[in-house]
Image (spheres, rainbow, N blue to C red):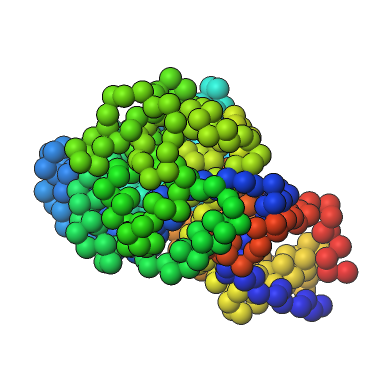
Length: 462
Ligand SMILES: [Mg+2]
């Protein structure tokens, strides 16, 4: 029995969840953080350190917490935190817990304890998503998903603090620790902005292809806009670094401090003109959106009405499956692109020869076990036992190669993760970097691949 190793996946590829014909797209919209501006890993250290200090100084957490260092490879994006049980867990697209990826603090919770706590690997929808099964988490649900990139340092801080409490036998409430950590993380963003602005090169990755990408879209007669939650001074600094001082010339509309997802859901908030001189907004009513001016807050309804941009002619890129992509897809029928930087690492891992060989052998071994299990002979049963052990080891090996604790961002052993499910639902296309689009013409059509269902690949090894 032999099986050919799969061919490499290109790390710069663009993947389609739905068919997307770019010739129908007239307007390109962009989020800023982690969509246009990609940060170096050191930004996570900075956020972690600032939030840790905030916990001690403002929330009076024990001073020893200042000694707990950031571990960049601890968490991955898209995990859930159980606010009731104080556990960080990985869920698949069917809301099943992945055993072996459940952590209390920095300590793995073994499978039998997990099953005792939850009674079942499969969680009820209401437990994860709240009584309304909302894609945006209801406050009554027990689980909070940590889906943005700034949440990777947040999860590490949360787990370090819990680990400290556990080890020192200090009573704590998992929900309060979560809210304190989240508040600390959120409130240190203005300090982080100041530091990034003072030393941009240190924190933002240069991307020389970005100017070429904007030029290409402009030459094809496309309209461009930017909607970001970040403040103008921060965006201006980063965009000047990435694109040049005249970066605004590329954009028909620039909206800062938009407060997404409210920008997409709350139609009552007026759009304001931002005054660079005072670094604040003016109260005058806005009747038209002009190129070269900066706008503030507002809503997607006004953006569409004032510019006459509608539904399928708009393609919006963001890195957050909910706050960037969910509402524009569901409510405004915009087309969407997700920029998922982790893809670069995941694809590189998938392309490693040792990974491919392990994954291949794992499949073959599983088939051998399946075919041999009904043979009662002693020899067969001895082999079976060894194969089962080897299979367990291989499964862990192919998982841990992505991330030792939580494996791949996109899959559990058999299924897509909860994060993938949301990504596939709300994004028409996804890729690791916005400038990967540069190699496609502005009339290119992306076609999704036909997915394989369990009954369709039963005969793989025959
Ligand atoms: Mg973003």
